[in-house]
Length: 306
Image 1 (cartoon, helix red, strand yellow):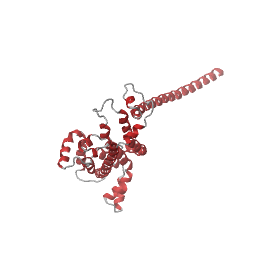
Image 2 (tube, rainbow, N blue to C red):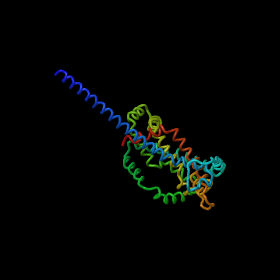
Image 3 (cartoon, rainbow, N blue to C red):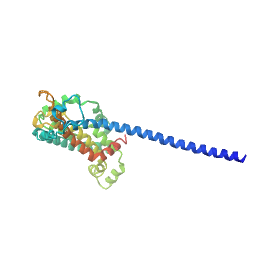
Image 4 (cartoon, rainbow, N blue to C red):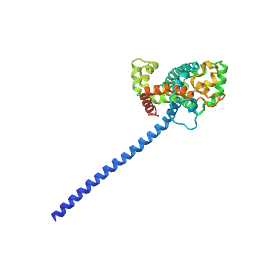
C-alpha cells in the first residue's frame, strides 16, 4: 500500500513538472514565432523601401545603353563613375544646388521661428478667442494646395514677386503650415505650467519664457518639424516651377525634371538622371542620420497629449 501511494506521488510530481515544461516551452515557442514574424515583416518593409535607392545608385553607375535596357539588373557591368563627374561639372547643376540650399535654408529659418511663436501662443498663453482661431487654422488643412494655387499666383503677380524667390521664401515667415504649428503645440502642452509660473515670478516676460524655458525643452519637436520642413522644401517641384520662371533661379527638382527631355534622341539619359538624383538625396539622408535620435523622440512626444 505504501509503495502504491509513493508511486502515485511520483506520478503526480512528474505530471506537474511535465505541464510546467509544456507551458514554458509553449510560451517560448509562441514568443519565438512572434519575433520571427515581426522581424520578417520589418526586414521585408526595409527592403521594400531600400530597393528604389539601391536601383537608383546602381543605375547611376551604368552606361546610357545599359541603363535603357528592358531587362534590368541591379549592379552595373562596369561602374561608370564618370556619370557623377559629368553632373558635377555641369554649371546648371551647381547653380541649382546652391539655389535649393538657399531656398530651403530661408524657408527653414522663417517657418521654424514663426511656427514656434504661434504654437507658444496657442499652448501657453490665455487669450480670448484662442480656441476659435486654432480651429480655423486647423480647418485650412482641408484645403488642398491646388485649390489655393490660382489665388496665390494672382496675389504674387500683383506684388510683382514672380521670377523671384519671394513667393517661396517670404510666406514661411508668417507661420505657413498648420500641421507644423499643431505638432509643436502638442509638444508644448506636455511641459508643466509651473515652469512658466516660476519664470514669471522671477520677472520673465512671455518672450523670455519662450526663449529660455520653452524652446530648450521643445528642441526634439523643433528638430522633427525642421526635418519635415526641409525634406518637403528640398523635394518641392510645383511651386518653384510656377513662380521662379527663370533658369537662374531654378532648384534641383527642376534640374532633374529637365533631364527628362523628350526632344533628345532615345534612349533617355537615365544614368545621368539617376546620378543627379543620388546627389539630390544625399543631403536629406545625411541630415536624417545625424538627427534621427531627435526625430524619433519628437515623433513619439508630439502626439502624447491632445
